[in-house]
Amino acid sequence: MEYLGLSLALFGAACASALAGIGSAIGIGIAGESAAGVMTEDPNKFGSCLILQALPGTQGIYGLLITFFVLNQLNMLGGGAPAMPTWNQGLQIFAACLPIAIVGFISAIYQGKTSAASIQMISKKPEAMGKAIILPAMVETYAVLALLTSILMLMGVQVA
Image (cartoon, rainbow, N blue to C red; front, side):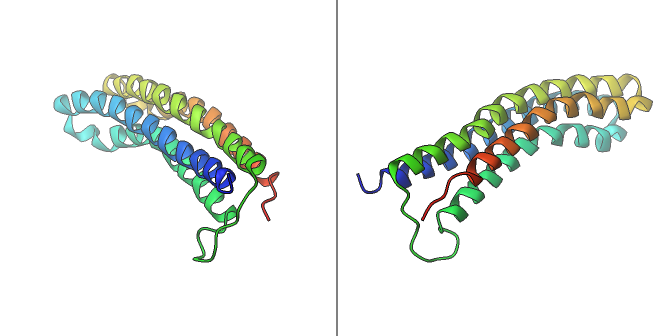
């Protein structure tokens, strides 16, 4: 029982990185399939395709950022003895990791789909690159909101 709080907190951090990272991998894969098809017809569109393919990767970065916040809060980055949160504090940290874990996973997949559609758009109308970036960036908004929610929730947990 003495490690329950620490275990819950670390499980939350692992979920944040893993789920947001898995979503990013799926989203980047979806966009990459579309990009590969476009570049077989016109290899000069590599730069535009790469930008749009990379967009779903940000959710994985956000999940990793929350993991670093948790590890820092638990004093696990400095090499000293880790903080030992109570089970209640551990549960609070776990809950704080859920917004970016869940929203990061789902939004990265949908951002990948939107990026794939935008890649198809620039294959026909290269001059529409600005509009093509805005469409998947709209999905990004919700990942950013989830990141902020997780950060604010983590700031509210005091671990001695």
